[in-house]
Length: 166
Image (cartoon, rainbow, N blue to C red; front, side):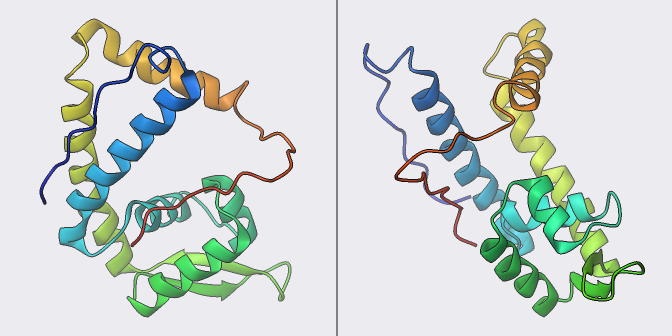
């Protein structure tokens, strides 16, 4: 991986700020995943889209909703995956206007390779916690994302979701 930059620790005003802590953790983990997956030529976003598309027959719109991407970002991501030969759009059986995102054999191999890298990086990150707390931490985050943090609020100006650069 590339040169790591250590961030300054949170000051007293931020050490209990859930939004700041989650954003900081997300950014750091995303940069580590980006560096780790670079050897495969995929971004964390592309890997997320591919691995989710492998789980079922998703239209492009349903896949965007499943992974939390806006329409424009999903189109760009699928265009990149198609150009790399990792995915393809196929007409949906029930609606010829809708497109199913299908993962190619090359895409399936890429996801399998990426899974090992992602698992290693996640294990390294979670190793910072005592062993007995790791599953509880991930479970608690999953619960928050599946419950209270499952929906966004309408706000003005809208919050732009930043995506990692491929």
